[in-house]
Length: 390
Ligand code: PLP
Image (cartoon, rainbow, N blue to C red):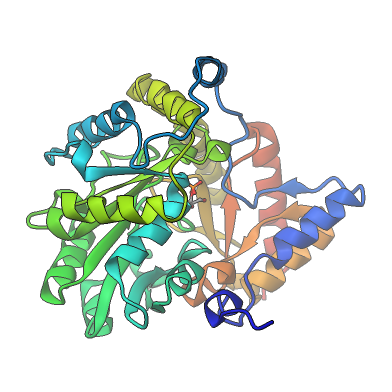
């Protein structure tokens, strides 16, 4: 039987960028001790008190169908958090709870685009973006952010790509680069959205991982709240990746339609997960800082190690759980470098090319292992790059 081109064409025919990761996993299952600096997941697990609340809620009977847009209590908690952090008036009518940020990205694109519409996204990008856009039968179009601009997307480049497009997806703090978009970058993004009547889909799942200043949401910029859908998640901020709990914040009419979409797709998020998420959010900013602290600490460690050598340079960045390293001095592609490093030293990193053409000649290092092992792996990586300098 024939499957739909929406499903069979989801990956766009190209490589899905996971080759090095899969090779590393294969080596591990064959007994090789690989140091994995690949995926964006904490080296801690969800904190015990959050799990206890999940358990309590489940035993209290919150195991039936939960209200589809989310429990009133969680929507209120998310709305209050967003309002406190951004200053934008936000109520539960602006919030729909989703099974993680990924489902929110899909739903946001379903809301913003019709089949065949062009949906813009910034390259380098989180690996699922083009497939998510294809999944709603829209057409993904990459807008490059250049290494020479420290991967801050430029308004003129967005404007040149915008005619005929319906939406623009941005992500700050950014995966894979760690870059936090500056106020002037965000102003440029907002201007392009207004000039070209684009929906802005703002993926803010790393909003608690900002090392300088505070997180700035483009929804808070003048006249942007009516055209912005913010994607949020408990995954990164509270080490709750497996719980699958996120949200979209946007205009109330969009949220009403997104609730209809949820009714016909996911049918919401389990009540005991939502109760645990609400409990976690009520732990306040100090808890979120504690979850983010290892990545800030490891970035400082990395800056120190990288300052002592010349083979590798670090893309300047102030957020998220990743380092983007420029390895062009070796003359190798990111992919060749990553495979060679894996074979020589059993260290797995992601090739920049897995995240788009703009990150070619780079590698992404996830700062997701314990500090001493992380520092050792990074030193080995730098020495390896040095041995390969052209
Ligand atoms: N957006 C970005 C930029 C990510 O890096 C991730 C996960 O790594 C997600 C969204 C999806 O996160 P989740 O579905 O776990 O909330």
